[in-house]
Image 1 (cartoon, rainbow, N blue to C red):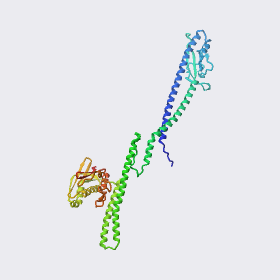
Image 2 (cartoon, helix red, strand yellow):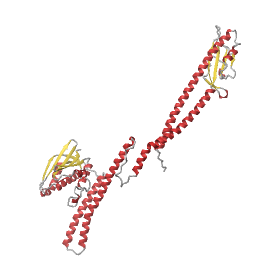
Image 3 (tube, rainbow, N blue to C red):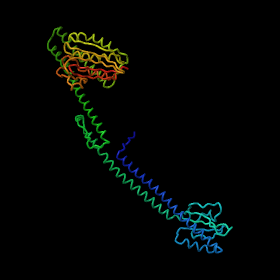
Image 4 (cartoon, rainbow, N blue to C red):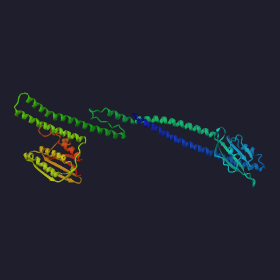
Length: 462
C-alpha cells in the first residue's frame, strides 16, 4: 500500500506564486512579441510601398527617354543605402529589365505572370526570410501595358531581434519564477507563523491543563475564528473532564458505602455463632442494600445508553393526565404521611414511550414529595400548545440557590452533599429525566423563587 505524502501549504503557496507570476510575465511577453512582429511588418510594408512609388516614377521617366536602357542606373541609385532591399522589373512580355544583385524571389513567380500572386513572406537560400510585394508600373505611353515590379526586403535583422527578444523573455520569466517563488515562500512562512504558534500552544495543553487558553490578541483576523473555536472546544473538554471526574468520584462514593456496610455486617455475623433469626435479619438488610445497589447500577446503565444514543423510544399516543393520575395513586401513602396538598390541572397528549415518560414524571413527583415540607403543596399543571406539551411540577419549600440550578440535572449532584445517605435516592433521578426528555427531542428546566420550585418537562406532541 502506497503512502501518500502530505503536501505542505507553504510549498503550495510558493508554487502558486511562481506559476501565477510566470504565467503573467509569459503572456505579457507573448503579447509584446506579437505586437513587435506586427510593427515590423507595418514598417516593412511602408518601406516597400514607398519604394514601389519611386520605381513607378523611374519606369515612367526611363520610358519617356525612349527606352529602358537608363532604368538600371536609376534604380541602382535609388537603392543606395537600403541593404537587404531587392527589386525586379519586367516588361509586359516578361523580359527582365532590372534585377538587383543577390535578389531572391520565389521561382514560381519568375518571370511574373498574370494570376501569380507573390507571397507575403518566403524563405530563400540559407534559410533567410523575406517579405515582399508586387505592383504595376505604368510606362506613360498610351496603349502600352505596364511593367511588373517585384520588391522584397530581408527579415534577417528582424529575426535576430526577435530571437534575442525571446531568449531575453524566457530568461526574465525563469528569473521571475525563481524570485517570486522565493518571495512567495518567505511570505507564506511569515503568513503561516501565527498558525505554527497556535499549533505549538495547543500541543502544550494536556488533560491536566485544560484551563489554559490560546491568546488571540496578536492573531490575524483570518485565524481569530479558529482560535475562538479551539478555545471553546477546550472549554467544553474541561467541562466534560470535570464532570467525568466528579462522576467517577461519585460512583466510587455511592458504591463504597453500601459495599462497606455489606462487608461489615457479614464479617460481624461471621465473627461468632448466631441464631437463625439474627441471620435472617442481616440477610434481609443485605438484600435491601443489594437491591438499592442494583437500582443504582441499572440507572447508570440507562444513562450510559442515553450518552451513546442507544435509547430508542417507542412511538405511541400517551395521555399524560391519565398516566399521572394513576401514578398519584402509588404515591398517595407518602402524600398522606406528610399531609401534602396536591392538585392536577390541564390535559395533554404526546407521542412517545409510555414507560420512559412514566419513569421521568415519577422522578419529578418523588423529588417534589421528598423536598416539600409537611403541610406543603404540590401543583401539577399540564399545558398543550401547537406542537409542544409541557408538564410543570411545582412544590413549596426552601428556595434552591441560583448557583445550584444549572447542575441539578447532573449525575449524583445534590444541593446539600451532607444528605447523600439519608434515604433520598441515588442522585440519578433528575439526570435520567433529562436523558428521557432528550431522547424524545424534548427539554427540562428548573426555577426556584419565592418559596416555590418548578420543574418543567417539555415534549413535542407529534
